[in-house]
Length: 329
Ligand code: SIN
Image (cartoon, rainbow, N blue to C red; front, side, top):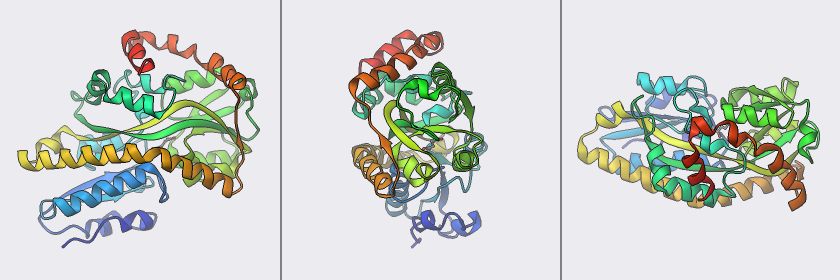
């Protein structure tokens, strides 16, 4: 009987890949699930661990999932390449990190396109959303589901009460052209940076601010090195829970069906739990002494007005119909 790999989450910073592998029984297919987030209350950490726990119990003897959180196996820049090379089998990268494979995922990054996570979930369950899941099949990527992470908020080394407060500041963004254009629209300078480098970048002043969910701001302690976070809810952060076509095709049909069923159930469960996780981590930030600036309707409108023109810039690449479909979810 294999040991659960979940303990690895806590030990991940010190454990080596070789030690992690020792949890699987001889003869089992080993599926490495790599991701970049950490802590115990993060929605991706919980979903990844749930998936591993289910596969390790229900597919015991055939497959064993090892979870590598916190960029301990692969970070942002290498993980997609590693999946195609077969060095890792399962990932859950942010939808903002696929720019070199498809411009269509830019739709998820458009500022204020989803009024909340429910609207985003509606879109991912729609015909257009489902089609996007397998947008990169020709590359060899297979989408297993969308995992919501939360809405994003801006933090900086000064209070950002109005978009003009961001003028002249350097903001860390993911590798997304939409995010870069959005920062430029606020008069700031975007700086793409791997997630694992953000805390250091904020601490040393390489960047002045960043945008993220409550769960990332809390579990990565960004609030410790920022003046405050403003509750802009300007953008969605969601993940593509994914594998490679090669890995999926390597399973016999009955095992593949079982694997896909577990993936589906874990995805639904994760999306039902995400709002509570975000609320908990918002509270955790306040309890730990972090400062949150709230916006009334008039103040929020200023942020919308500053950033919404970005949609037009990406209409040709993303497609007007797809933008409409997402905006009306
Ligand atoms: C993640 O939540 O996976 C990382 C998001 C980021 O890079 O900001």
